[in-house]
Image (cartoon, rainbow, N blue to C red):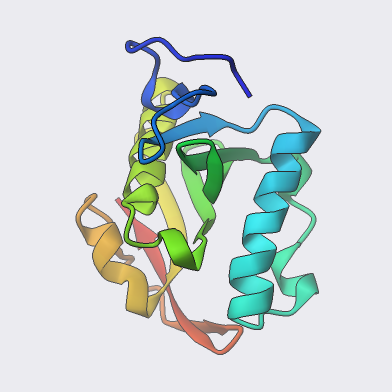
Length: 163
């Protein structure tokens, strides 16, 4: 991890060691160690907690994606996978460890992801989410996409979302 992030660092690159214990920060995963943190978080949330099959969770897109990591202090607590296409970006695999779900880490991940997309010039962002989580997305302007029906993934109803 970076040794410190300046106050004016982009929202998606503010993690640095030595932050206060309750401070939430987000950074782009840049190393294999960072990717291992992402895999550990997603394994805890999707495979262990939600009983998602391994082959459904790890679909081969992780090495061609950008990942964001959220920290509370120096503890990795959440992640978000971003994929970039010709005219839109796609948010995928947002996960926050159960014991940190009230920390606002998910909100910081989404904000940071939107800032990164904006920096790269993307004006449209898409994603899928469990229907029970739709309220977090609506605060950022996402809504179920017209013409997209609910579908199932690991026994969770999913929506196609867009902004």
